[in-house]
Image 1 (tube, rainbow, N blue to C red):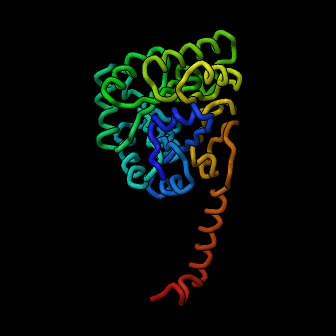
Image 2 (cartoon, one colour):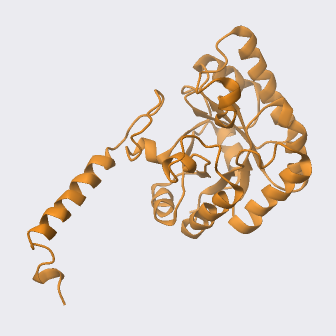
Length: 265
């Protein structure tokens, strides 16, 4: 199958074809995501919560992202690999942003990076794009700003906030992003943003009017049970299936039913 690129995503928007995106953190899951035909894989800083056990995404480091990017790269054959730039890896200045993003691309094997924030990030995004690093934007609820936002809250409910989000999307487009994640904003606002920009919008908790959708894979498979936002649909309950399988294994080992002759040399 044809390798997906940033250009592919824009062409999909132009055709009106929805973009499918999920998170990936390791070799095995990436192989499955490719087999299922997912167009883009985000090596998200959500790994801090679902893989490393942190309460938020804030402790995730550039080295954490690179480590997981390498595993995803080894399992990938078709999808576009996008890496989150973690908290405080790009905020301090343009030089730091380019150095860290370049490291994620060169060492991790990512093909693009994602940066949270609107107008205040435009100069850094322009610099990254000028350095030949493709950038995905991210506005609405930006998890790296939860201490500033006061928690995980829907953004853009008021008319002024909605207008600000539309304006910020236009600013990001002008800065050179190839796509924009819209997180936890009213569906009507997401529709207006999607119409206002020529680059694809990828929704998460932003309704069906976006050009594509993303979920945390561990959430949609029911593997991560600690936190379930309203926008998550669980397409499977693998957590309970895995626990049942482990319990059966334990029972058979305790009863000396495993290994049987079939599993013995």
